Amino acid sequence: MPAAARTQSHLDRTLLALSDPTRRRLVERLGRRPQRPTDLGRGLPMTRPAVSRHLRVLRNAGLVEAVPQGREILYQLAENARGIEEARAYFERVSTGWDRALAAFKRFAEEDAR
Image (spheres, rainbow, N blue to C red):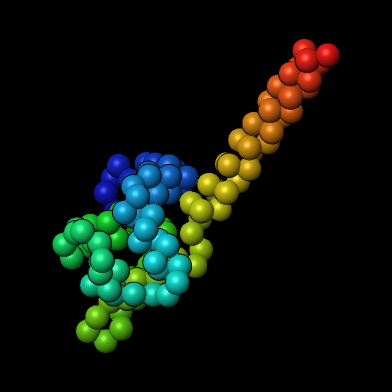
């Protein structure tokens, strides 16, 4: 793992890794079943090395795992993706604040309409 990646939090690495639409698509595909990089790249407008680079980012973020299968490597979603749990908790905290702000705005709009 690069030194810069070690200094980022799990949450930061997760959000950064998932900020790319191609990586989100790879995660969705891996959510269905473990796959080889060649299979993951099918139908995507990119080379196998590009798929491997995206998988490396996801692996460094702790979102996917490489599992040797004979002479091939299968990728699968990581069982204990700490960053996903941190992201879930973060969005829960943030959404609570948004819910309160929206409720206050609704009350204000309803009072103003009277």
